Amino acid sequence: MIIAISAALLVAYAVIWTQVSSFDVGRSDFTAFYVGGTLLREGHTGDLYSQAVQQQLHSALIAPDPEANLPFVNTPVAAALVLPSTLLPLHAAYRLWSLLELAVLILALALAVRSVEWPSGTPRVWQAAAGAAALAGVGTWTMFVQAQWTPLLALGLVLAYRSWKRGHMATGAALLVVSAGIAKPHLALGLLAFLLGWRRRRVIFGALAGGAALLVASLALVGPSGIAGFVSILASSTTRWALSTMVSFIGVVGSVFGDGLAAHLVGLVASLLACAAAVWLGTRVRRDPSRLDIALVGAAVLSLVASPHAYPDDLVMLAPALVIGVAAAARRVGSTAPLTLSSPVAIAFGAWALISVAACVDLIDAATFPPGQLAGWALVIAAAVTCIATAQNQEHAGVPRLRVAGLGGVQTRS
Image (cartoon, rainbow, N blue to C red):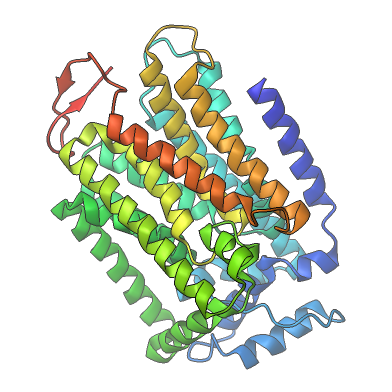
């Protein structure tokens, strides 16, 4: 049933994508990426983030549409990655980039399914169901239509998880920071807080090395003046969009308080609380490495809750987290075959469905349904569930505890 519903949704997403018009392509998020890549290809380094320069190219690309400039606010490394696609016309580049991002998401989920620890006897159909449900979330639809970057962060999350499970602590942290830092650093606040709470020296070193590598690459691409322009346009972009349209908890705040100073202050407090919870999850993993899977899921959800800027396409960063969460839930059920929708597994799938349905409702009614944006509340509920599950840590009850290289302490194996 799960696979059939997911397949139907994916077919619907593909049909919608084929119907995207030239007009809609011009107004998609990808147009901003295309502008950034084109300007870098044409030698604009110090003025890559000049809104006047961007506006001129953007207007020419979407003419005769008079829509205002959608600024390129991603890192210089992101501009370098999208640069090869700018050798194609805008519409062809949009189609190519959409397919590439979908392929990255599929790769992330395939790696997640293969990397998690499934209890012995778990039928492959349940592994496929977890991957299919993760791929069919509403975030995939909006990501595919907008040709957005977020699958790169999803892939980075999986690669970090694989590295940590194999004992490569610094490598995992570096991969996570680099993948987030390329285009979506604001989505990684909670994940960085989780790393701080974990307080493993190699993890912190890896994160710092990843950040340093991004900075060096950015300086090589655009120089100090380009970096200054990036910081300036990033700061000005925080008030460009209505808060009530976002899926992170700032969307709930914006629905209640509007877009004024009070809303930003309340949103800041909410983000700090979410990051504090992520730090707590990290401390739990430090004390007991067997908590890593479900704690990482919680940190990813809290990271999206804490984000000051997040739209439905950003929900795909949680797709691998669903696979990790379903496997953890299956381990709590036990290794009996065949696996069924018993309580922990149902909760994992149910939380994912709740987030997707809430985001769909927000898209349909423009967040006018009380109490404002529903996706933010759904994410808070999912985060609370993962925090409770991390605290209980019953997934390996009664199973011998074994030492796992690299994670420190002990880890259980079913």
